Image 1 (tube, rainbow, N blue to C red):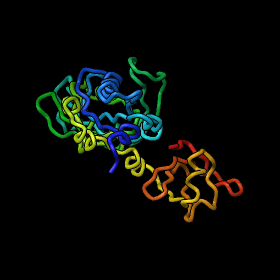
Image 2 (cartoon, one colour):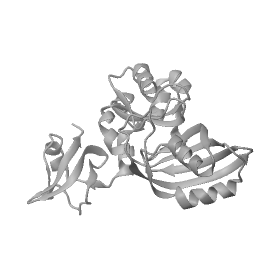
Image 3 (cartoon, helix red, strand yellow):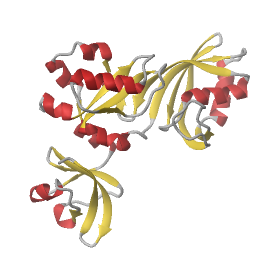
Length: 268
């Protein structure tokens, strides 16, 4: 069991972001509340969008690039601008808004406005009340749901989003979500239950490679991974390096003589 100090130094809080504040202000609230030098969130939510906002604590901020591009799941309400049956709209969605689509980021966005390919994994209409339709969608990271609804509206005579909640961001979902109110009144014991060890999250998003005990010290100084350091086949691409339960680094496969991996992030 990790101490609170260890969790604050290398942990992740899944915050239930309320509608209103920016993702940055929520992350900064967490930083001030926990007395940390640094926090960062894994993927911006628009101010009026609520839901899952993973916030990295301490050294876990260095992991942002490894988590930020994963799939996201949303539940929301869109309002259509003219009468239309839900099943008719679903047919249009299935033919034009599932799979890989081209999307232009909205005017008010932090990225360069150019057409980008994004994948819509699912887009399901759940319930209709007049012109309001409840929907659920799973999309590639970086997809703008508000723009997705707007583009659908161009096919059906107009539509806009009235409510949106993110229910999953990669491996983080509502099962371990923490409200700002609960965080505000949390005891030390509560915090230890709320904070996810960053190592546990890392194991969920990439392969794990076990190294020999005698290799640990040199790897923690940032030296490359050699064939002699491991006793198992290495995966291609990015992988996490552990010795038993001790997290050492995130490395990338690199075959050059006896060198088989180069560090991307070292937990020294």
